[in-house]
Image (tube, rainbow, N blue to C red; front, side):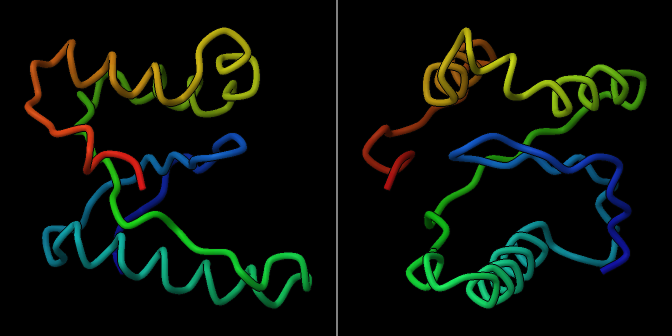
Amino acid sequence: MECNPLRVGGHKDHIHILCILSRKIALMSLIEEIKTNSSKWIKTRDEKYKNFYWQKGYGCFSVNPRQTNIVMDYIINQEKHHARKSFKKEYLALLHKYEMEYDERYVWD
């Protein structure tokens, strides 16, 4: 979809995708394509994944091009990072740090 991935990774209950978003595609379309195709793929891997589904929402953040190495290191070290802080706590802290308005009823499903 002309969105060059720089780093993909995650931990237990979430993933991170650092990519260069194409000017030709809406972010919503990219996320929909990723969720649809990865759901179909994982269900072919093993019977235990037959009920796999993605949550409805997602978070997206811009990254300063000069800080992509920091973000790539962060993605690589997810297991170590989340040994100290849960994804949920980290995500809410990020929303607070950047003063983003949200309704927690719609953040988790």
